[in-house]
Image (cartoon, rainbow, N blue to C red; front, side, top):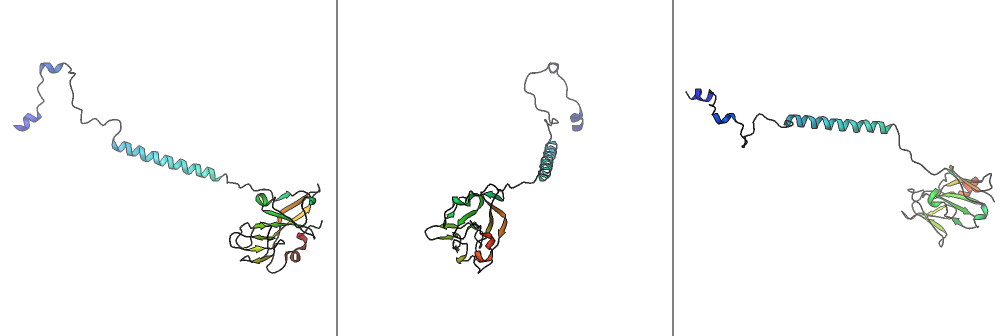
Length: 194
């Protein structure tokens, strides 16, 4: 009999036909906007879409490689009379990594790169030498190494007089020095006679 009571519909009162404005218990079958399954499905598809878009943008970006803009390989270095005999000009060291040296025999352009590990040496005018701050390599004004771990003299670039009468340094032409031989003897063509 207990089963029959539970199965029978509840009796309606006459006052229940009027809608009540009182508190009403929430329905248990109502899910809200999204169910938990809907939320995680949309979250997963959203993440997939974001990663797919990022991958596609990376693919498109690879079609346009990054380009490093370097200073030109040749540059004008003024006229020969701008340089005094015995002087080492550091005017182009920062921008082009080149020293212009004028001696009695002519003008040459030294590559401001230590032959040990590629550091930039400093010109020490009081000591009349180039000194690498990293490991102590020392070079004479000619570029010849005489102390420290540098295995060979400093390299030189080609220098010539251009059509306008100015000195032109061509960094495409490198005179690579061999160990133990004076640079002027190895590459006499690296010195511009003026």
